[in-house]
Image (cartoon, rainbow, N blue to C red; front, side, top):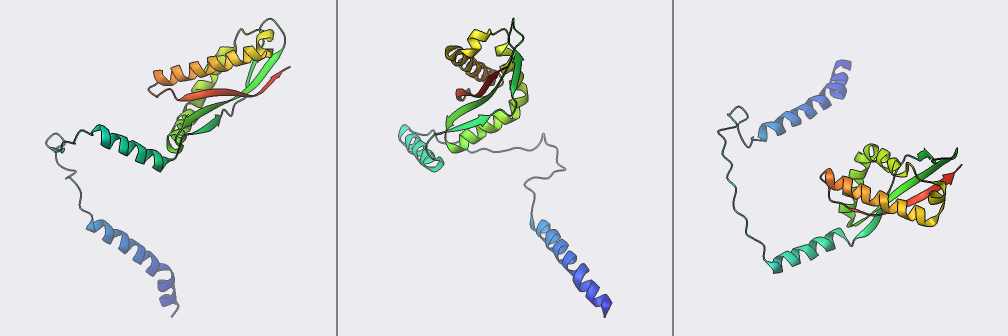
Length: 178
């Protein structure tokens, strides 16, 4: 009797799952023969109609309404940037967040790109501050100029690496001089 219980509790569920798995895979037919020479396969592609201006505008508004209106999303760099102020014994540290203005889906995609490239872009941001004087870093105009330089550098670098320049603005979220 205990062998029947063990079989029903442990063997039967596994056998049912594996049977369903193999049965489902037996019903699937491949789109092409994987043993055939890939140079001999011919793919027929149906020509697509050129969209007219009316249908293009209608589809754009339908997509825009589906994705929602554009909005700001911020990507905060996780690394605090620290450096020496030239000609002094003082250090500066600051954190940066970049703003992306696009539909929710596109902005999320852009933020994902920034997250992937964060380690490559962070030293480039720090390089922009090398040689800056204390007066420049401590003045409001100097920090605004630094934010603009960071934004331009990031957009230029993204374009060079094959991405659309999509950074709308750069914000310095904290700035400390010690």
